[in-house]
Image: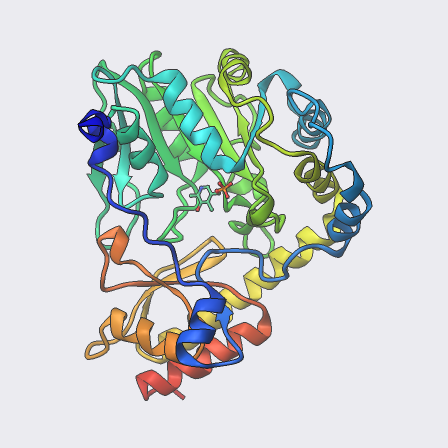
Length: 374
Ligand SMILES: *Cc1c(COP(=O)(O)O)cnc(C)c1O
């Protein structure tokens, strides 16, 4: 049978269950107004400046992008103050993560190390590529213990993944701690720091550099960074991810990746978004405010809210209100949040910080369902 020859790593995969869409919920429950606070997308939507640029460049859709996306690479290098030779761009940071795994690990021999739970792509792409995954369970407060993570590293560990701030908990380790882990790792092991949510880490009075190892001086050479245009820049649907890699790795990335994975409109949008300080600052302020407001209100309702430095909050509803029931009840009221069953945390919910109006709708619905709070 032909099907018997499907690679065992692929056969072992479970079918992907996508999150519920606004349209689906509208039809299923017959409600007009449905809001989605499930995927950590930008609460302000797409920047008006970017929308204008997309419209202006629509007529160029017939062209292939320039190989290697040189204009975008140059813009990112200038923005970060780093050499172009270290920058990789891809179809979402998903592509960058997958490529780092494929370039750096030999199936059947090497392993990767990460926490559990963590962003699901690191273990899934590793398993697809035939690479062993070693995981350190996080404690109940989701604070990283890098000594325990380090204990999983052996001579076949090629990659260690750390998410800062973390998804789904929102916890953010200090850059000094990440640096110490990097310095301790053997020279044949690369530390990959995923900074997808780093723009949201600083509270008022702090700067991005207080939380981002990438933004510090003398970063150890065995660290790669992942960033994305999907969150703070509001371009999740256009799929643009960034790798800040050791130079040798960036070189192999450009040889091995699919040739045109960042398309011509995505490239224009990203170049514009980098310069759009106003939109980025508004996004950060909206998230800071909303995060504080949601956290206070949920706590008042008796939920356990985990401290978050990202654009989402993870929480446990009060006793007597199972998270999955709350999730379903919110759906019936037209509010889509993320149940964390797939992260093996059926007791928790993750809610993305929305616009002020969305936050209000979410809190009102939750208050009704939980029946308490003031
Ligand atoms: C959202 C997210 C990303 C970004 O993924 P894209 O493919 O760039 O959209 C990366 N890492 C983490 C941990 C995320 O939550």
